[in-house]
Length: 228
Image (cartoon, rainbow, N blue to C red):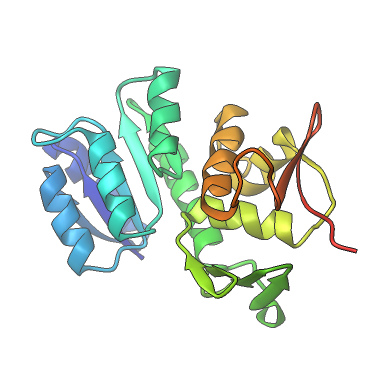
C-alpha cells in the first residue's frame, strides 16, 4: 500500500513514515501543496494524508484540486479542532479527519478502515457488478455509471451509494450509516453523514428539489428508492 503524506512538519513526517513502514506501507512525502498535487498526478497512491496548513497554499484548496484529478482516499490532519473546519474538509472531498496531536494507533486504525473499504476486501467475487435501477455498480473496481455515464465518487460516497442501492427501501439511521460506513474506529459526529449524502445527491440527482434516488425518511434517516 502506497501512502503520500503532505505536511510541512519534518519531524511529523519522519515519525509517521517510520511507524507506517513498520506495518509494511510504502511512504512518500510532500512538503507543499503543489508538490503533493504533482506527485498525485503522476503516481498511484492508496491513500493521501494531508495537513490543512501548508506553506504555499491552503489545505482545503489542495483537497479540492486533488478531487479534480483523483478519487484517492483522503485523510485530513490539522491542529484546528473547530467543527466548521471538519465540515468544510468533508465538503471538499475528504474521507476522514484527524486532529493533532493524535494517537498513532488510532490513526493507523482509521487508515486500515478506509483501505478495507476502498480495496473491496469484504466483497465476494460474485458481487462484482450490481445493477440497481439506472445504476451499474462495480464493487471491486469501485466504479459507478448512471445511464451509461461514469460518476466520479470519493471512497465514502461510493460506500454510501453501494450500501443504500443494494438495500432499496431499507431506511438507515444516521447512526447506523456512521457505524457501517465509517466503522467503530471513526469518532465523528452525525453531520458527517449529512455532508456525504448531500455531496452524493449533487452528483447523481437531476433535481435538487425532488430527489429521485436517495430519499429522506424524516426523523429516521435515509434510504434508496424502492422499485416494485
